[in-house]
Length: 113
Image 1 (cartoon, one colour):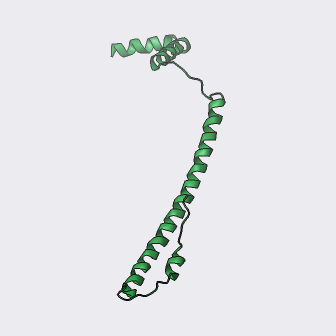
Image 2 (cartoon, one colour; image 1 turned 180 degrees about the horizontal axis):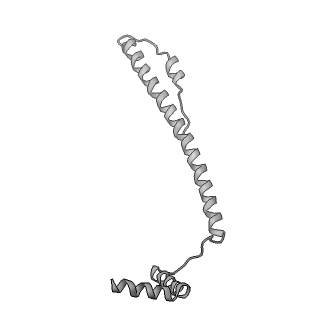
Image 3 (cartoon, rainbow, N blue to C red; image 1 turned 90 degrees about the vertical axis):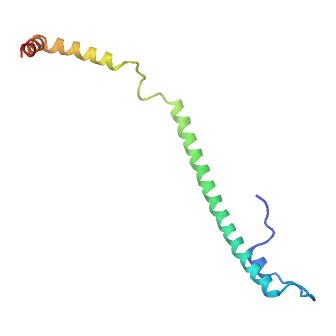
């Protein structure tokens, strides 16, 4: 980060030598007052942004570590290529096996209605 040459206090305390036909001291003082306000505002904003930057860098480091740990640990859920159709077929076979004739009788009765 670049070194600052002035602080708001330096600007406030700066004295200029008066000269003949120079600038109006009241205008210069008014302008410098506005410069000081802006400088203080920029300094405050810069500090807030630096703090936020530090906080976000720490968060990135934390998340990077979590991703690294997650990549090295085995997955808690195995990947599956089973489709919904496979599940429905298995469920149907299981129902036939468990309920057997009851399912066949219920289907025949529903066709009669």
